[in-house]
Length: 519
Image 1: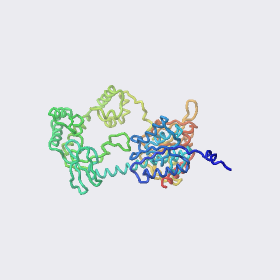
Image 2: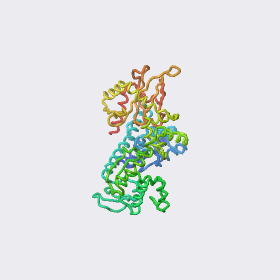
Image 3: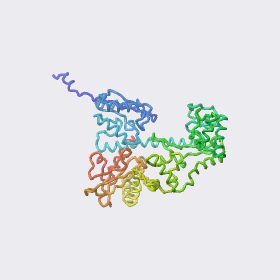
Image 4: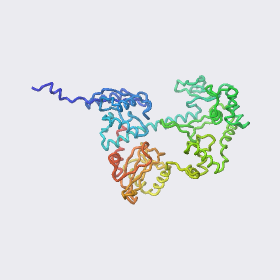
């Protein structure tokens, strides 16, 4: 007769696992309840016991900032405070919609290094480290990132439409102005105080003139600057000397006076997109041609003619400098800061803009060379890549034809050769010339145009002689790698997992990813 206790002792213990749940505001499909249900079913089917949970509710997946659950998980793993060997996540997008797919891979690698395997419970592939799994996971990460990019474009388009209709989109009103809440029929509902927001989705906000004293001060600033030719600093000292406070009841500064003189909202224009902070990237200042501008959106405080005169004075301060004077300003900045860059030039008071140097000397690099300074970083690789594409246009066309022959749809951005495949993801084609090293061995050096930011890079290595394609590498976006990558004939598992001899395998992986994503 069988011994029941012996049978029980032979029953394998369930694998200890943790679960990670993230919910932003996207779809009911990703509600915590739905995620937990799928994770629990997966755990039961794979003999796993869930022993702890990490969660981030109402958090964006664009980066790790603000995600307490994921940060706590990383801290527990790195400090060896875990008692589980598996982490269960609903799918790749719940792990994150990182715009750099390598960042997503890095956090998973931290767990893998600690002996913890990540399981994507709702995905159709097994995260087992195989070649197909690695390629599919890379594509899935790119698709998750692309979703955020597409959503960002749609939101931006909606905001631009509201700007063109004359409605204010966020931010304080500014000195001399106030935010007026109106209903859908443009009937006034009241003035919003600092920090107050509209409560109804159909309500809108416009700018209206503020207190009379502030309006008169704005007009006085323009009068002093245009008619009396006082500088911003002189106007600042005048206002502060009379005890007049600026925005938020603070003393005036040169920058705040300059802001009043340069902001078109004082002539009733509604301006948007002067600065960008899309997808949680670094805030950038956009050129004027990218601004969204609506004339006559609000009641003006000054005339358009007076505003134009003030702007003309500011813009002509450096217009008449000779070439040698421009270069001398550059030498002075180099002596003061020890380095040069376009951003540094633009942010230095009384310096001509970097655009001025580009216009006068054809490029910043040429201006730098004329004063005997060379930047550490070599920007020539972008032009080399473009020259290489022109020399091997027939090879690029061959790659293009192969993708079309495999049943894919392809569109090309003629300005930068960026491909959009199946209207789902972008790919950049890079040709790597074969060169001999000093020891006579073949080497391939890839140089990347970082401004393109494709989802994937299809790198084609050329045979010795550079007349035909040897093989391909499908690489995820390379934001965290160096600007160049050197290949040998064999490159180890880390890189060769992305190597294939023709485009059929790449398109098969892409097709599988599309089917799973649609399901």
